[in-house]
Length: 251
Image: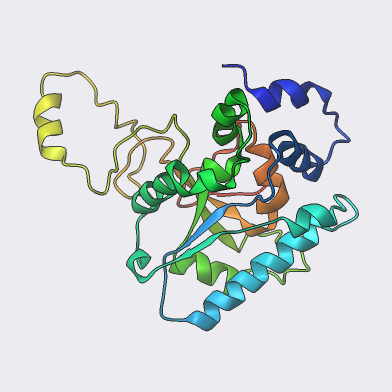
């Protein structure tokens, strides 16, 4: 499938092109007013810690976008995290967050699309925009990693101590929700099959033995704009993937 934005802009980029420029090009191409990941708060009971987390994330992110390397005040001003806070999310799994996120993409996200966008761009916009293909899951462990262990927002987090869970929710992800999957019928079915396609021999992570479990830990120091810009190319998830729980990705 030939993607519109990638086909239109991708061949024009050089080693000198910044990630901020790539994001700005994406917004201009689709005439979008906002960008950034949707964040799902999945831990409650300490609002002060959450406020510290968001303050850290905002300070670090805006500093990256406003550095000499990127120098994009307009881009910094249009960043929108779209934080989802609901007590029903307390302790929510990655699969549950993915379900909710996909529901939002199919309904509420459309309000962000220009009403007069042509048919081709309306079709490809949600495919090429990381905002509609990936979301952030923050549980107690990731919250504490940022609030208690990460370096200060004005310092690089070289040891990758602060991280969030980045969930893959693009249209190509069609695996079952392993936390809720009924394995009994599957086990009977597999008695007559040679191999289980859901078992790739990996250590089980939250019910999944796939090499790609559909999410990864991403260091907050590289989240914006680097990871966001990289994911404007759908195939880049496979190139940058780091399997949890022990690996943390940083661009």
